[in-house]
Length: 155
Image (cartoon, rainbow, N blue to C red; front, side):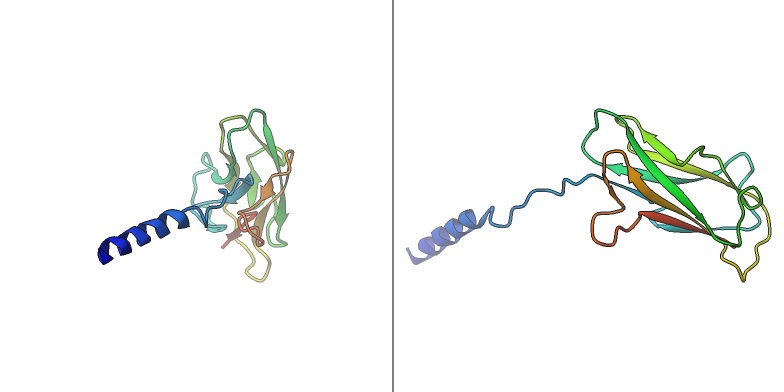
């Protein structure tokens, strides 16, 4: 009898405790940029990639399905050791990406050019997500906004 009461009390406790810690799933839409799960990359000054195949750095969208287009604007911060046309060529035209409904990742393509770098200078190219036409969060959820920028170092 005592065992039955204990089992009954434990079962009742478990049933009433269910749902106490329930919370709504994270529903805030966001975009972020990464390659191989990282927000940094190193490319060779010798540009080992064939000229016909540029490197891709993907911008990802995390949201419920959209009914209309999402436009993500980005900017480039070029260190004083790099120069567009000499060290790299932007294959992606413009400074925005358009996500059509049902598309959840879009590439930013850069072709790296074989050219020696000055190790005393800033040989980085940083892609920074700056805005969306829907006000979505930039970077991963949280106060640090991780993956809202992607830094490529040419060595």
